[in-house]
Amino acid sequence: MDYENNSWIWERVYYYPHVFGCFMVTAALLGLSTSFFGGIGVHLPLPCSLSNFGILHKKKTGKRRIRVYMDGCFDLMHYGHANALRQAKALGDELVVGLVSDEEILANKGPPVLSMEERLALVSGLKWVDEVITEAPYAITEEFLNRLFREYKIDYVIHGDDPCLLPDGTDAYAAAKKAGRYKQIKRTEGVSSTDIVGRIMTSLRDRKVCEDHNGNDEKPRAENQSKCSHISQFLPTSRRIVQFSDEKAPGPNARVVYIDGAFDLFHAGHVEILKKARELGDFLLVGIHSDKTVSEYRQNHYPIMHLHERSLSVLACRHVDEVIIGAPWQITKDMITTFNISAVVHGTVAENSLHSESDPYEVPMSMGIFHLLESPKDITTTSVAQRIMANHEAYMKRNAKKALSEQRYYEEKKYVSGE
Image (cartoon, rainbow, N blue to C red):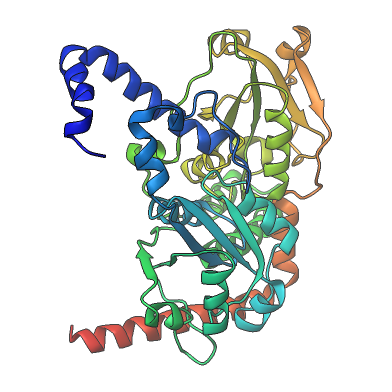
């Protein structure tokens, strides 16, 4: 755009700064809304497109959108995966995710916990994902790399700074690095699928220990309860929560829908019920129960994931607008009034709760705003945990194998750097 030929623009900016400021704020808000209203591979038109303004038309049409690719197994999807995809999206305009096939996972890592269908629902449900390629290979070969460039118009391949090694010990991203089309993001510390598998196995072992001591005196039970707790290395910050948030509030006449739960081991069933709840209104508010509440009503070996870990997983879902971190078990009238809640919903499939003196949905039921939704999937946190325990030996070998390969990688890296 030529500055001299458009000097009238800058004159008006000088004399009417408040008008130009309003325009820029509006433009920013419209830009943010596309990530929420746009679905996978679908880009809904904005009510007022920036391309209608002559000032920005040349700049927009003259710049080609950068498409980035990131692949993974995304088994036992967690906030670390979500944060990786968030960082990848920030390196381009459109994020294409490659979902490694069940067969490739089995050959390179061991049996997957979740099926392709379940992993696809989780990845597609993330707010930063634009497209998904299923049945992606574990290793990016030159042949597949060329296909990414030609067929999918990919500009860069993204991966974290943690090692991704093939069974023979070679780098799975060697071809992308050789082509000069590789970019790296920072790994999210404090969580991994390997860590979560370990937590689940420890949790279910602790459950058995707790049950064996059931009926004994208080002292061993208190000791066992401490064993049933799980140490998380995650350190939550306000900045990370903001990064995951949409930072949008409901409009004055918006229909706010509320759904609550533990949302432990965030899975495909959670994504589907959140999608169904969101379709009932304009704004979806999700209440996430505290660790203490989950432990009290779901037995003390739960939750597997801690409150802030669960909160980030829910915030990363494209169907969610806002969360209440540490929501109360009992929904009160004050809460409904404070958040201007129009409907309270709950799915038909949920974890079994211990005996409660009163129904947590008694108030919304009496107000006529409670709705029971048919859950699209019958998967639960417990059923996912049971899959892992059923293949206990295979997952132990898988975890040991990955830990050994990572240890060798870092030892070699340290040796080469001369540290």
